[in-house]
Amino acid sequence: MSGDEARMDPEDRSAADLCRRIAEDARRRADEAIARAETLASARLAQAAADAEAEAAAIVARAEAAAVLAAGKARARAEIDARRMELAAREELIAAVLEEVRRRIRALRAAPGWRDLLKALILEAARDLGEADVEILLPAEDRTVADAAFMRELEGEAARAGVAGSFRIGERAAAGTGPVARSADGRVEVNNTLEARLERSLREARTIIARALFGEES
Image (cartoon, rainbow, N blue to C red; front, side, top):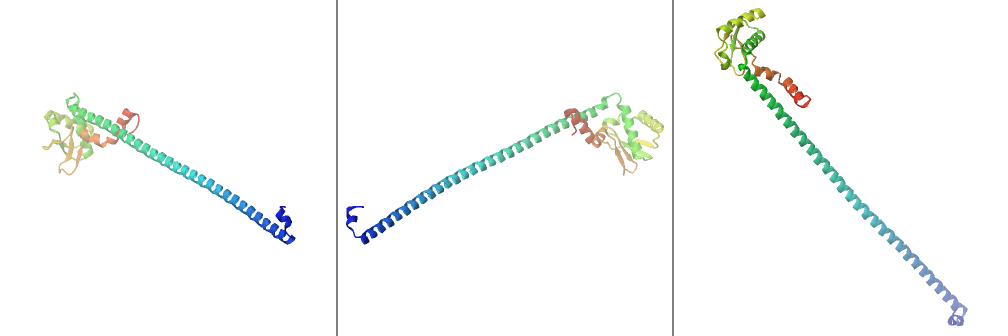
């Protein structure tokens, strides 16, 4: 206790003690409030830092996901383009083989057995036509083959094969390589040219070519 407090009467000392206790209590409360404020501020700063870090991570994750998605789309497009190019290249090869087949078909006219093959094609067409009178349309290149001797041979082979009817060469020329058999009234015809036969079996022909070229079906 100080000298001044010693000279105070008891009531004054009681008031001084009260004031001191109040002041100390106020200081303690202030210290506690400051401590709480500092703790709260620290917590809020830590939370803000964590939120910022999480948002940054989320932004990075979204960017990475977008990059992965974009890369996936680009890869898918590249695979589609590559497949399209592969199919186009295969189609070109198949088309080239088919064109070579057509060229060789046209070249059959120069082969020694063309005369007999032409007769066989005519008889097959006449059998499919099923008419008594058969008009045979031939390409200009084959009309010289169908002379009188050819027609006699054709009728003889028709009789032996059981193909009834008479045959005559029509004035109109056919397109292709081989015959077109037509009824007398022109309403029904059977195109038995080698090109028409190839077109009718084109799917099978493409499958055979694809298997030979690529080891698989087209």
